Image 1 (cartoon, helix red, strand yellow):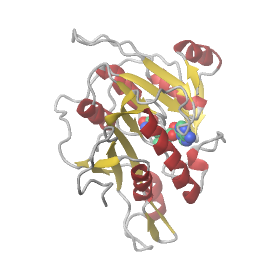
Image 2 (image 1 turned 90 degrees about the vertical axis):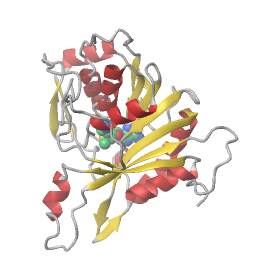
Image 3 (image 1 turned 120 degrees about the vertical axis):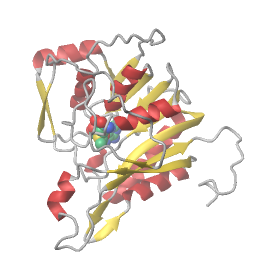
Length: 299
Ligand SMILES: C[S@@+](CC[C@H](N)C(=O)[O-])C[C@H]1O[C@@H](n2cnc3c(N)ncnc32)[C@H](O)[C@@H]1O
């Protein structure tokens, strides 16, 4: 893992005013006016296992222009539900840094990692705003960003993280590989991808404090007319390394552009448009914890 500081970002934008991530041009270092630092006033924490955000959320510096980025409502819900101010959150496949922006707004320390240096620069760019809330309890958090591989978080100490909130590529459904970044998980075929996600799961288990939570958002696909349950395959790997399943949240997908273009719902091909993803929330058991019957490890 290689640390990328704010100064590294400033140095980068002196030479590059934009990056291209999978055909999408993203401008860096642009002056911007922030209209709001928080979600709409009617925002409430989710209380059921079905989450749906038709309006993805564009407060602070959040934008939907990074291919496959997640709605800021997702990390916000996770952070508020599972951490306290000053605790440490990890997103080791952070893309444009949505999770980190939420950490900055909510006063949580954070570590963000991505295999693609350009993505780390986008995340740094999104973090480049000043924030002085009226809340006297707010303490500006420490936010560290790295170019690195989720399979080897060598700069993250064992049992140092309070929450993992991350959103891996779904095998090669959305490819991040046009830039040919060595180690990109979206370049792998399905079998290899599932195998490497087990290594990701092992690293998650190592860095998380016992009793704490690891949330991953993951979707499925179709191949040759079959439904391919990538999410359940990945879930199995997380269980194999020692996690127990706390929640399986169904997240409705509103922007299924690629899928829609290919299949247009129940049409000629005769199958449904996949319009959901799974947000699995795993818990790392306490040392010596006796797992109860019906915990996912028992099955
Ligand atoms: C679905 S995107 C994450 C989007 C992010 N949640 C956001 O809101 O912008 C997945 C990210 O995983 C990164 N990635 C792929 N393989 C990786 C690896 N081995 N280690 C770390 N990051 C990786 C890709 O570069 C991509 O940015």
